[in-house]
Image 1 (cartoon, rainbow, N blue to C red):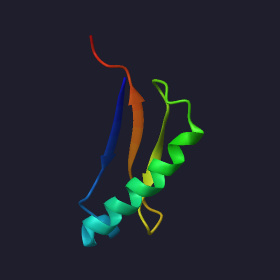
Image 2: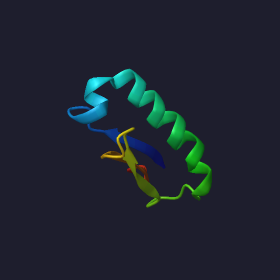
Image 3: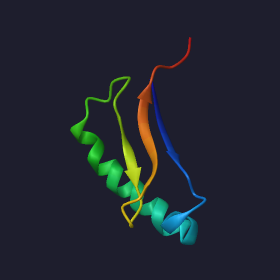
Amino acid sequence: MKFVLEVDMSEGAVAQDAVAELGRILRYWGGNVRHYELRPGDGSAVYDSDYREVGRWEITETPA
């Protein structure tokens, strides 16, 4: 399996302060993953500090 995190850094709060926003996203979602079984197909939208959707994380199968 793979854990995939994708964040669009071209607009909004992430574009204005990428270091702070990415740190916040990683802290928040790092603590939140305990609510998931972490099986392929699990995932969620990722939001910046302005509560705009800027990406998502997901668990995927590892290609053979």
